[in-house]
Every structure is written in C-alpha cells, then in structure tokens.
Image (cartoon, rainbow, N blue to C red):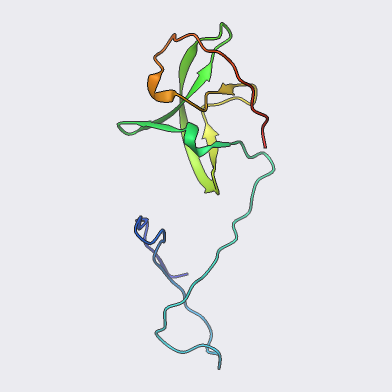
Length: 120
C-alpha cells in the first residue's frame, strides 16, 4: 500500500487506498477494484454497542452507572468499529455498567433503573 487517505467518505463508506501489485494476466492497469483488509483482533478487546458512544465537541464519552446507581460520564478513547460494536481503548473498566438507552435524557447524578442486557 503506497497511499492511504485518512478521510472517510460517508457517502460511499470507504477510504481511498493505492495498492501496487505485481503484474498478472488477471489484472489490468489503472483499474478500480474492491479490497477487503482483514485486521488482527486482540483477545483483550473491549467492545460496547456503538450506540452507547456519545460525542461532546471533540470528546467521546459513555454514560455509566456509578456504585450508588446514578449516571456518570466516562470519557473514552475509541478504536475500530466491528459491525455495531465499538472498540474502547481507554476510559472504561470491564466491571463498568454502560447505559444503552435514553442517553439524551441523562444528566450527571440522574438516578438509574437497571435493565440488564447480556454482553455478546
């Protein structure tokens, strides 16, 4: 790969890449094609539903339930998207309970009512 455009195109859901391949009878010069890159997945990956990740200016955060059952913001650093699951690189612990619905109604300290959803 000799060039990668770091801008994601939301219209086509793609990135622009330039690949240099060895000549082959099956390949013609200057053609457009589709490439699928398979990236390694770490066994220590922390994934949460992407719908839980909120944006505030330039920060990403999720709402979590504190020990006293109230809503708290947890600033997170996000990674790759795997279908509907978002990789969390920093900001959450495995034991944190993430709020998945009604985030727009929450404020810090809002009392939460838990409806458990099993992790996938």
